[in-house]
Image (cartoon, rainbow, N blue to C red):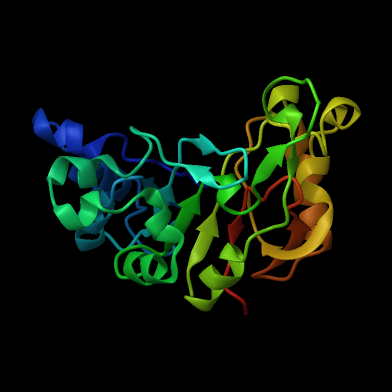
Length: 243
């Protein structure tokens, strides 16, 4: 079965101009017979208020997306505006929300909060495996950086009984860390297929040729709920809580 993964894009803005997205999306899915918990659908959004509204309308699984602006030289994440926090938080004027960044969602408190309205989180892949510059290396984009050790985010998400999705894998050289760039760029699935023992079940990627190879590899290493899949460059995955 083919599933779909719609996102409510800029829902606060669209609501401000009289074009709210949430009911229209749910109605469209309902006409297809997919307004149900077991539908092959996830709905994602960066804006918390949109997901909270959707939770009142539909049993479909929801994912809180988690962004950042960039990666700092030390591997920490940069939260420069406008990628500092969800836009609905900024637009709210609420001092409590204005004091937060997207990074709140990957804290234990943030995982607990998102679990009250969503089924999981969808962090940018650098929340899971970040990177630092390689000294004296000249290369485009991320090819000038190397991967750090994975964080404990997947483990903590599992403990909170949350799904975790991450994004996005691309096969351009400048999108591959030095660990995988150049000759490995000819086989970009390398960056997400070397087993490191993380429990994964899906991933977002922007090339088609590698999909079948990765799916075949996943099937050979998976149970019904968990996959042992690579996260060295980074995991782009939907991971299930531990069985």
